[in-house]
Image (cartoon, rainbow, N blue to C red):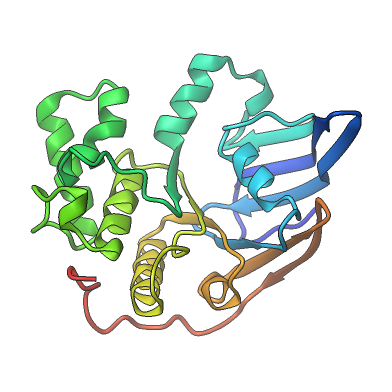
Length: 248
């Protein structure tokens, strides 16, 4: 079983399988994946189209259930959770960042970031305070009243990252988070992820771009539903000399 940094496992996946029925054919998207990810790791999941990386992301994000195998999240067996418990995990334990920001177009940045707290039953005053703190953490404290069409692509993605952070999750799952951004803005978003990681955030990122994966400390490569390689990337941590630009 592959493992990263020391300490208790945050994610422990054993023999994970996922099969889909397509007509008379059974597609085996995952074929017995074993993986351990520890708290405060920064892991990139790579692989060609059809390798199983998106399926794997959906399973560890509790958006889908495996056909076989075991998934232990933060010491809890996911298979034993009921629908309410799974909803709580998705809302509080995991922060999702997608390639498309999925922001509500008629809501302000602050209202978009508040949304997971609304679902979590957090009161209005506390909700606004935490949403503002999350926006300030991504250098958007001066854009709280702006709607998505008043923000650049990089700013919209930062709102999405703030929304992922606002519940103070154990893990951020980022699926191709720079896929719709130009190279300069992508670099600034990756600098933001690096800063969040330095501050203690666990980050798991799916990407097909080697230059984006190079920001992670560990790269897991999937091929044909299996782990082909699991390699640490020892390197000096790059220093971001200026705050992430609010105008990206």
